[in-house]
Length: 594
Image 1 (cartoon, rainbow, N blue to C red):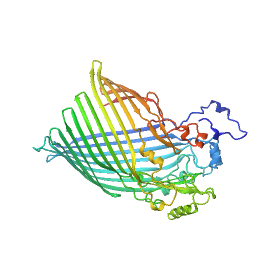
Image 2: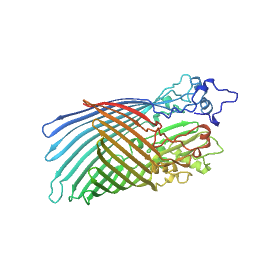
Image 3: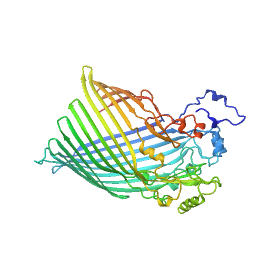
Image 4: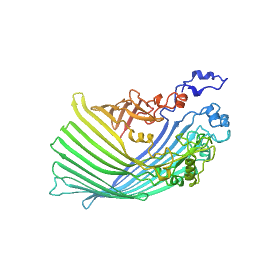
């Protein structure tokens, strides 16, 4: 990137002549990182008499990926981190690379068939996902070089899941009903295990590995939980024009108790072409083991940050309570219109209420690097009483902030309730011409999310300034995750062995927040094209290009950036865009089915 005012050369220094041939505006971290993927899958089945069948599936994959991180300048190494020995290894600075090695295994086996008028399916499923993280081509500014490592093993995350399931289905002929009463029932047991393993000592001690601080022994955890569930449902046509579908499920989790969910769906056809449909349901999303037991420590010249495990002494001292599942209530009502077999239209209005949205607390602590000016994470100066209150809270968990240090702690928590209301339109049409079959499609969605309630600040934190369970940035993340307005238009064509598809997506403008300043990302159109041919004997080929006009992640406007950021960096890119940094890319595919 180009030099800005804060990136001046030292007095008396002259640039390396090689700089003249360097692209000073390129940012290599905004690219598609290299990866290597190997995968294997197998399906098997065998008949067990006339009314039963054994089946099994298994998949295994190995995925290695690398992502380039920000360049560490010599001036930063020497001045900010005061680590001159690192320059003996990296005299011109270094470009760290984050590498992940992921292995995933899934297997399922079961028996399905018919018995005493019921269709049954009994199955066992097992899943395992392990991610090991490495920091390459880096350094730990707290260690002495040469001699200290430049490649680090940062630790691993390991998740295991086992599921046993029984599913039953049967239709009952009832004279008073226009169609058979389709009944379903079942039971399920699930066991989960989550483990976080520490990396090598050099990856987390002191400042830790530059670009990614390894998991420390204090961050290690091994947690398990289990759940059991029963469910039942029934669906039928009450009359030839009135359809009704109801379902209920009860679950009991070892970590947060039991919860019940249900769904009621109905549809009434006024004519063969026009119908009215509606659904009311409730659901929940259990906090993952990864969220419940997440803990991470980071170190830099600005201080130490701790995301404390919810059940840890540090989090409890700061008012944390056990995470509760996010619970949702959903309502929708709409019309469908099918004037001919070649045309379909549906328009639905919906409302989604979510209670107990998960988020992260404010950072609690202070900066004591300037003894005359003790500040909180927002930069506000603390009174002696406020400082003493923080010391007392952290001290009860065995944490003390020494003079000259800075420390901030936070934790995951349920931050509040949201409501999303919107409209969704879909239109589909088929057309047969002398040049082939055409399939037209159009979809539009408009929605708006509001904050209905913010959780109360824990009593132990209410005397501190700038404490809010739902910060402004968190509010924007909840309300403006996606554009309020989206449209997708598509056209598919097929003639014999040949096919082609085109689709255009319109993303409306979206509100963003950076450095406390609101700005809007403008609307954008993204176009995809693809085509293919059946070659015969099981072979097929396809060619396509996604994002034809190379639309990319948008820049953060300069007025929404801090003065330091503007002075140091040429461009800041928004990291939560609907677009990626990859831009346009094309692909070719040859497939064989047997």
